[in-house]
Length: 156
Image 1 (spheres, rainbow, N blue to C red):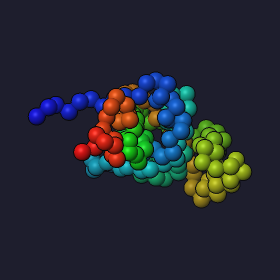
Image 2: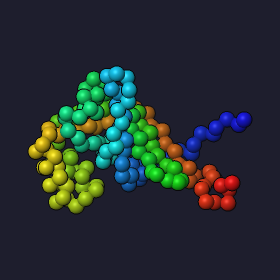
Image 3: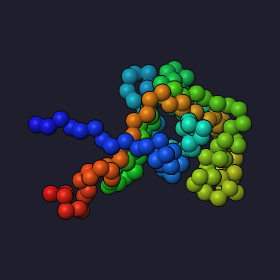
């Protein structure tokens, strides 16, 4: 049996473009019992970090307070499969939360709607920003280097 080849990675430029265009990130944090808590979130790629908005009372925030080591997966449904796996350190940011949260929401909706949603959410629960600083990044793009594509002549 042949060893499984390493997936073709994204270049630095492709990585930046992908992170600025991708729509959903999955944030993995460690529960106190050793299981993984996984949450799909809207995000923003900012200054090399992945930035999320959430509420301070969530499991992910409690977990980060206990253990700031997290994993983030950002991918596409594909095919072809493409994605980025980030192992990093999460920090909780309570400064200027509304402006940062609105900036995240503006990736997904008009500015006025983003402001309204951020205000509504903050009126119910204390908001916080999670900033993930990458320690290690792994990426893959199965559209590269002749990888077999579903529906192609090579897919048999």
